[in-house]
Length: 75
Length: 273
Image (cartoon, rainbow over all chains, first blue to last red):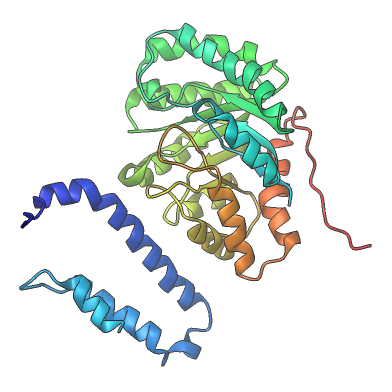
């Protein structure tokens, strides 16, 4: 059985607030890192991967596979 | 650890909440008057609601050793109906005499309409006239920043004592202006649409713990009174002491709510033997 994708508007209706909430949590986490001794983690691969992941979120996509790209990034 | 839940809508919750809250250390809660999920038609409906939260709910909470207090107000959403609101306002002073009513709340703004602003100002004036504490709701989501600025502007026009005013549901973009003006602020730990436990802990680090009331505002929506306990847990995970947690989650509510002598709990501190 092949399932059709949700209409884009319906996706926003259903998930906009969830995404807003999740983005706020990421923003707050990065603020938290910066408020601490950020120079101590400048070379920390986890921070670098988080920043790379944000670039993936913001990039135009020929194919919608951002989640797959992020999982590859975190692998 | 002793806890106070300063913003909780018991009318929308089951008794199991009280039982579990008591088991987790909650010794007192306070219930503001709010929107019931539909617009009421009759002032008498509000008056019965005020009776329910000032007479019945204290008995339900007392079964589990929790002291239940409340606030009376016309909430911002229904304040858009001025005829109804003005009738309710006439009845409110009688409730200020009740032994568990702490003040006027939650008033404030929803969509920041002229009617809402008028009824908000009337309720601020009423709080000044009757020397009541004031609990102010700030709008949701995209309406929050405009509404909060408008509330601060309106408060500046009246001789309010900032010590007696709690501006609730502040977030990272509204906290600074409210604290700088000397008011108490509330962080509301409400899933998805308001503040999270971790962001609340962040704001405590950024702006200090004074004049801050952390609450769940659990109601008929997808909410949970135990977001408060989750916040205590996150606070301690960051290495904060039991004494620091007590300051934030028990002593601060005692200090604000205790400005009304009806509130019987007092700040406490941990002393080693």
